[in-house]
Image (cartoon, rainbow, N blue to C red; front, side, top):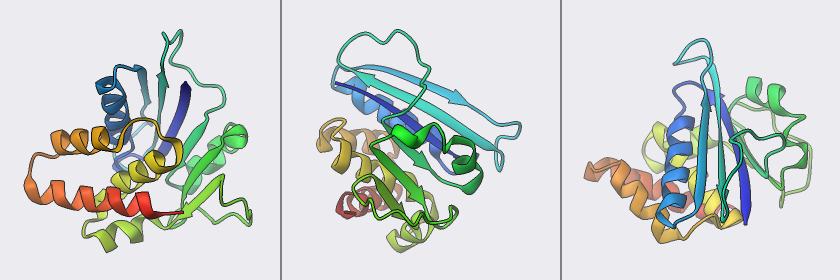
Length: 175
């Protein structure tokens, strides 16, 4: 199994943290992993992206030509990567900040108002946990309990942990 993931959005949206959580969970299941961040000119508010590669065998390069899965959190990121994500079998779009696509291919495109969904879960910062739930339910990158364990490690504060777990479960229910 090999999966290449692109996560892109504005700095401050939690995309780098999401990439690290995915990488950490895969490592806990003894998979080979690379996490390759690319920050924009500005940290908060500038565009940024990261690539995560997960494989059962050694990974030769962290670079990704065409990801298998993509998480696009804003319109500038969609505009920048639309040609790269054309071959992805899963594309998660944040429709609060990306113009919804007319595509009826719901198996491939998951169009979710992530900012609104995060607020519904209780905190505007849990959109990355929602995405993690979607990725686990659609791509089966690693076991659900591994993702939960990494979320708990990442967020040791009980209240923050609970809202992130709520976001994760919310994402798992999105079809």
